[in-house]
Image 1 (tube, rainbow, N blue to C red):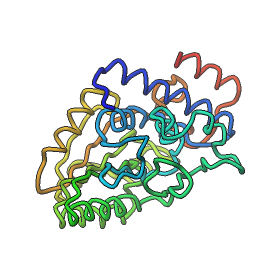
Image 2 (cartoon, rainbow, N blue to C red):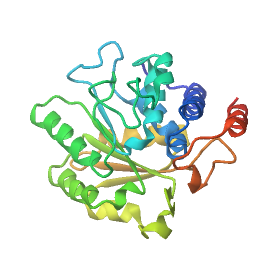
Image 3 (tube, one colour):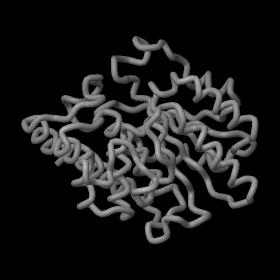
Length: 272
């Protein structure tokens, strides 16, 4: 399945956003802000870019995806439901004690999840291992890893970046969901991490900067990554935390809280 129609991709992303709001509200907990900011990125990956098949989710030559910012699991679960890896009804079990859709994704329980994540900073290391395996075995599959901009304050990310470059992992594409907010405020306020593009360049990455809510720019960025040889690529996707919901946009407090009934109804109305 490869969808090239931009309007259709936008509709899918909007449905993903509806599910994010719906099931964070029903669970009474979750991380809506960064999930909403990554919805367009995930839509392009799962419906336009990745070589995957929901009917053969363990295919050896499938592309892999690692959600390094694992707390935004509801975004991944929503895209998996849209693509048919899991049923919509399973979303009702999000963050429920008897459900399989935990607060962080579990590869042993959820169809279509390639890696269990949750401890921030570790995803790129895992993605390196997958990409290196693909190269050693001449399998040809690509590996995608979604990072948070707050997450890349973790030192392990930069150790992993050195490894990506050392082994010329041109089948690896990292994506930074650059919404400029994390749990306690802006990136600058918390850690002062700046010039993300320059940092990745200095670690040997091909860097691409896009509007993370522009489907065509995302597609073009991923296509450029595919033809880049001899080095890994990072797509720095400039996004808006809480994208699509007026009272959540660019608000750090929506990093990890659920809407109340009034807020939920307003959010769904806006998305509709």
